[in-house]
Amino acid sequence: TKDAFVKSLIHIETDSVPTDFTVSKLVADDELVTRISTSPAFEQRVLVGDLGLGSGGPLPPKVDRKSVFTIHWTVINPANDISGSKVVATLPSGVVWENKVRVSGGVTSQPVYSSKTNTLTWNIGTVPAGTGTNSPKYEGYFQISIIPSVNQVGQSPSLMTGVSFSGSDSFTKEKILLNMRNMNTNDTIDS
Image 1 (cartoon, rainbow, N blue to C red):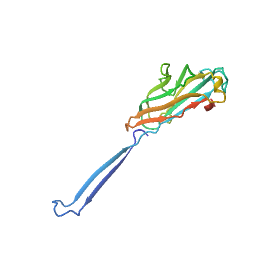
Image 2: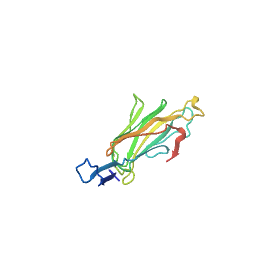
Image 3: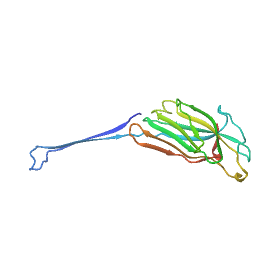
Image 4: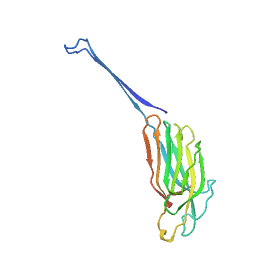
């Protein structure tokens, strides 16, 4: 449902009027309108498999050998349009941007990487109401890689940190912020 709201009307009247008043009854009317906000979902997964972007390297990762991971971001928006939406993430030291990106579901913008800040930004713009429920969900795929060093043996190297989805509900004007947990090499699933 897009732009849903609940409206409550109240009407009160009484014939019990103080003698100082020059009216036969007292009347009061009021209304309260509550706008219902959207409740978007943002998911992230680390996939193992080609997905048309290519793949390579050992999984689990091995010392001094390159392993490539495909990150899959999904945005679902059941209700009101979300404006100014974007996803941001940081690639930790040792994680390499492979510059292989694909999007689907009607979204046209792609995640963009800044090597100056190690920041990945997906400026989605408007996510229409019904995305992922009445129309395809917005999906972004991209690849990153790592070459673990000997001091990472027995550890699960971080792949992404500080991942968040943000935007603004176009109907209620409420700010939306979904913070996600950091991802590491143990988060892989088969595609």
